Length: 85
Image (cartoon, rainbow, N blue to C red; front, side, top):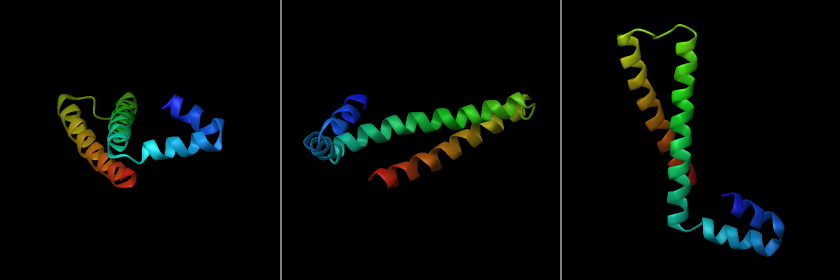
């Protein structure tokens, strides 16, 4: 991704090449996979920040929190897929 950014900023032709590469289904799949991992990590990190505040530290709270994290992550990942495709 950093290489694509560098190439797109180097010249107008480089931007055109990167744009052509990123419109392919394989590139969109790779971008979606990377974004999915990042979004899941973000949602789980927010859960841990909430737990640091003392909410959901019990076993039952932890189980419920993990289910909420998975549900929210699925929704956000699907929305990211719609945005990318």
